[in-house]
Picture (cartoon, rainbow, N blue to C red):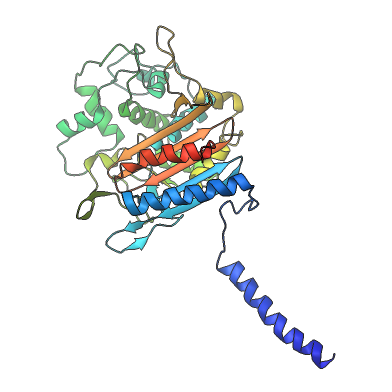
Length: 380
């Protein structure tokens, strides 16, 4: 080997080693890393989204994570702001948020799994599963579609729960059974969003499966989909207390106040599931196939519920339903609980998904969702 060749090798090999180490270990990651080739229009949308998200953080105190996907391609998966204001650590895509009412879609899936396995039917009466349940006409379908007319369990627990430890779902149901409250309306007569219904659905899942709610979802949803950072957390059991859950905050003019757990945080199913944007995208993608249930069963989740008079309601099983400005069917849900403000929005036709997780009670989150939606739909 000539001296010239040895000199070239001496220069090139260290450069290649440095380059390999940088790319392999430093994790250089463009948005949509599973498919990094973006069209000109996609690049324009990415630039616009980044501008909107930076403004949301710097001007409107948005502290959260956002994932946007189009045509099975992630174009944005970024976090802005702080995870813990005492530790002053930053949010990352591994930050685990309380999903609040976005939890309901997983509770509904648990019911659909049991239905597909022949363990129950949607038109079964709740009394079949809940002893002493005082409302004989209410069915599982009423609970799923929010047409039961049940009173608000939050008010009942706040009034009647006197113990120092937090209640679980069975405790809330015992209070409901003994409170002798009238229904808000005849079951099936109209739509009224009801957290109480999903607390009951959680209890039905536990009674039919003979498993705790969190264990059932782990076995039948989270583990099969590889959702490694998703779990149920109840202050009654505290199984997942050591997981890296970020706290909820309320923003004031002088800063942020960490919100403590309340007596309601022992009750799950209407809330109480924790996750990340990445895990929620795995869930989103699974809903296009039959990884959990058959396609025919899954259709029920996205079908409008109906009232007794046949009128449609804008809710399926664990999902709200609407049409966007272009007439596309949008499946979505929001979540609001103790500082957390979240959204998932799915355009099934275009396979477009927007996921926003925020933990500082930022009211701008809803406007941000609209801005992202407009950009994704082509309004640059």
